[in-house]
Picture 1 (cartoon, rainbow, N blue to C red):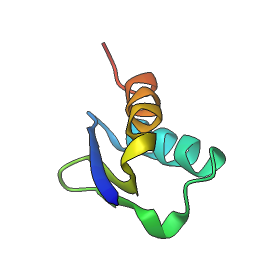
Picture 2 (picture 1 turned 135 degrees about the vertical axis):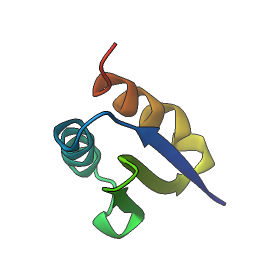
Picture 3 (picture 1 turned 90 degrees about the horizontal axis):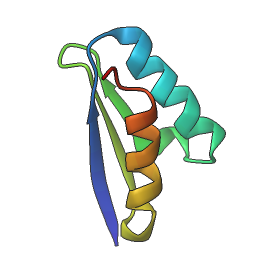
Length: 63
């Protein structure tokens, strides 16, 4: 069963970097959506890969 995982970003560059990293790890483009207005990246993945996606999102967020 797929789950939607969201990552919020402050700017477009952060969101784009997260997108690129998701693609590089093998997530199909059709499963990734960027809401540029809200600066949110949404990914539909099997529930068991949620942790990996959250790690990618964390890597690209400003602290």
